[in-house]
Length: 89
Image 1 (cartoon, rainbow, N blue to C red):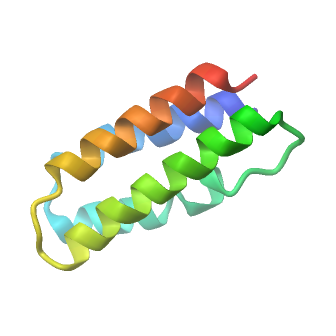
Image 2 (image 1 turned 90 degrees about the horizontal axis):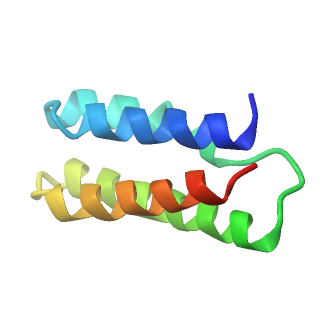
């Protein structure tokens, strides 16, 4: 799977997780880890975009784990992942 496909898969999963109860969403987010770890040679801008998406997804997970509202974190994670998908080859 290429970088762009991975980013799109993460984006789709984030959008689905946003409508699920916290325990289910957390399980879905944990499954995204291999996709956001990267694995190919990409430019610095793509690497930074992937890292930003990863950190934003971690913030969603922390909010869900703590039982806090996560709408803002989801929006940030989706935005960061959309940027990653746009930049990926």
